[in-house]
Length: 330
Image 1 (spheres, rainbow, N blue to C red):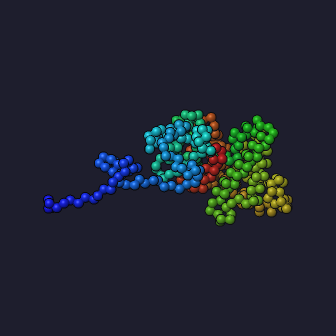
Image 2 (image 1 turned 45 degrees about the horizontal axis):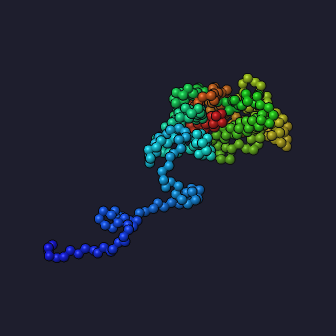
Image 3 (image 1 turned 135 degrees about the vertical axis):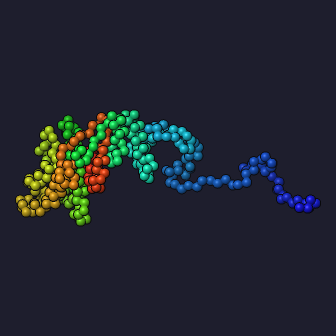
C-alpha cells in the first residue's frame, strides 16, 4: 500500500446531543448495531391475559403439593400434585394425566407422587399394576398388595364390597340412591366383561343386545334381593343359574309378548347363558378369576395396589377384563 495515498473513511452523520435507544454512537457509547427481536405468539384472551404476555417478569411458583424437582429456568423448587392443587384452587379438577415416551420416567414420577401424597395423608389406589411398578412402594408404605392371577387370587364382579355395609346403615333416599348406583355399576361391569369375553366373534355379535341387557339387569336385582342378608355375596355361577331358571320377571324381560313360551325364552337367552358360563367356568380361559369369591377385599385405610403382573402373558382380553373388574372395585 502506498503510504502517500490518503485513507478514505465513511463520514459519520452528526448525532443528537442525547443518547438514542441504541446508546451513544461514539467510542464507549454502547451503540447497538442490531435491532432487538420480539417474541411472537398467538392465543386466546384467556391464554394470554387479554392479549398481554403474562410472564414478562419472574414470579414465584406456588409451594403447594409434593416436591418434584427444581425449575430449569430459575432453580426454584417445584411442588405439584393434583389433590393439593385442587384444594388450593389452582386447578378445577383433582386429576392429572401423565404422558410420555417409554423409559423416560413416567412411573418414577408417579411413584414420587404416591410417596409424597402419602406423607400428606392421602392413600393411593393403583387399580391395575401390570409390570408391577408400584407394588414394592405400596409395601414400603405399609399398604395392601392384592395379587390376581391363575392360582393367586380372584375378584368377584358381584361383590358389593363396602357398599354392603353402607346400605345397612343408610335409610330413605340416601339408601335408594346408593342402591340404584350400585345396580347400575354392577350391570355395566357385567356387560363390559361379557363384551370382552366375546372377543373373536363377528362384529355384530360381540356387544350385549338390548334384550340381554334387560335380562341381565333384572336378574342382578333379583339376585341381590335374594342374597342381601347372606354372609357371602353371590357369584357369577349363581347369576348364570338364575337366568337359566328364568323367573317370571326375567322371562318378561326376555320375551315381553309371550313370557311363558319356553322355546322363545331359550332362544333369547342362549348367547347370554353361553357367555356367562364362559366367565363362570374355572376351566375356561378366564380360569378362576371371576367365578369365585373375592380373595382379598380393599382396605381403604391404607394404600392399595392390584398386582396383575401374573397376567402379563395371559392375553389382552383377559388383562382387559381384569382391569375392568379392578377399576370397578376401586
